Amino acid sequence: MSRQTQLTFPDDFWWGSAWSAEQSEGRGETGKAETVWDRWFHEEPHRFYKRIGPSITTDHIHRYHEDIQLMKQTGHNSFRVSISWARMFPNDGVGKPNEKAIAYYRDLFTEMKNNNIKVFANLYHFDMPAKLQDKGGWESREVVDAYVNFADTCFLAFGDLVYHWFTFNEPLGPILGSYLEDFHYPNLIDFKRGAQAAFFTTLAHAKAIQTFKKYQLSSKIGVILNLSPTFPRSQNSADKKAAEIADLFYTRSFLDPMVKGVFPEKLVSLLEEYDQLPVDFNDTDLKIIEENTAQILGLNYYEPRRVKARTSAVNLESPFLPEWFFEPHIMPGRRMNEYRGWEIYEKGIYDLCMDIKNNYGNIESFISENGMGVAHEERFMDENGQVIDDYRIEFIQDHLAYLWKAIQDGCNIKGYHLWTFIDCWSWINAYKNRYGLVSLDLATQKRTIKKSGLFYKELSKQNGFSYDLERLVD
Ligand code: BGP
Image 1: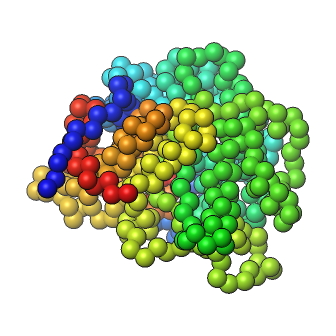
Image 2: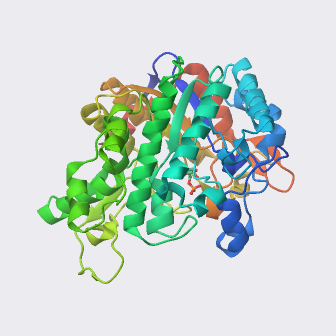
Image 3: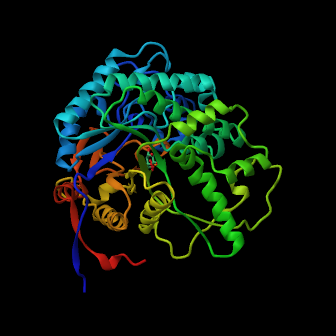
């Protein structure tokens, strides 16, 4: 028999969602430099689903007035955008700031504020100006300086309107994509260069925070990390070691320096042993990183990481990769979101929050992304064109129940942001998988609130929902 309990979240809980400039805005008329996505799409359009690139996406730049009303109708009291570096500095990411871009973002943020929607502004979401990538991207100190200048310009231009700031979304993403796994421009396979880029990304984060402090704003500044709790296949020591190393590469690599100010010693000695440490770094850099850590932490949680000891020998002539030390474990019986190829494991959100509580000083945190991308959602449309996405409502509820439990157990969690608001452009997957609370007809740009959008409105209004706690099995 199911017994429903009302799960209530802390007062002033942030209910909302997130997206990024490159995935939603479209080019518009403000002027904008070419980004690495424009460049890659131009060079290899066949690598993007149905050859759909970033030029129009969800056309938010022309429709933000309407979109803010949709935020209201779907219960948002907060929303994360990213500010496009290429739009703010259309002269290839440097030079004079773009007055038209400043006017656009000021108008957007003012209107959000006037509608009681807190502005969470992120400064970098995978969208490097292409000409700065030509200068080495995150491998270059010059690019770090250009980024800090961009950040400084944003603090000055929007400091009165932004509720919380973030230096990066998922800094690990571009490192994996650009240097290890071939899913971001410039598609290199070179760990050591990736390590340099990761180091300078961390330095850029710290330098932006250092700059932020001089304005003494009432907002906080932090970072958004994609984190997965790591589980070994078994308690066998080889499996446990494999999990520990995977965790160092994928979880601790950015979490430790960006939140604690220091790199994990075990990771540093492993990279030293394999001659994979970055070449360009000094004591001044390390001090800046140590002294300028995140004040708030966004947790993007999609799936757990399961690993086992390698079952075959490493080809020592192949490029060095983290997978030299482990293999993914395909756990029998796992539940999958087959459209995206990601495991669904709700309890992972609890484990992640407990890790932050126990090992990272219980820093103020929130779930900054969590969500479910589904292909061909038009299958679920009713006669009025509304997507009846009960699966998404269930996904949200099952994750929120574990989040609620984490809060009961003392985790300092301040909010939940879904990925995403209106269906947006998913990088090389373009519009294949839809994540939104609001559906998008790409041909007409018509927006229609999904059933989950109505649920979300009610969730936010009640600051909770009714749930059968028996579903929390482990
Ligand atoms: C996160 C990114 C988002 C978003 C989301 C869904 O990692 O921060 O930008 O895209 O994942 O992933 P995808 O779009 O690849 O399906």
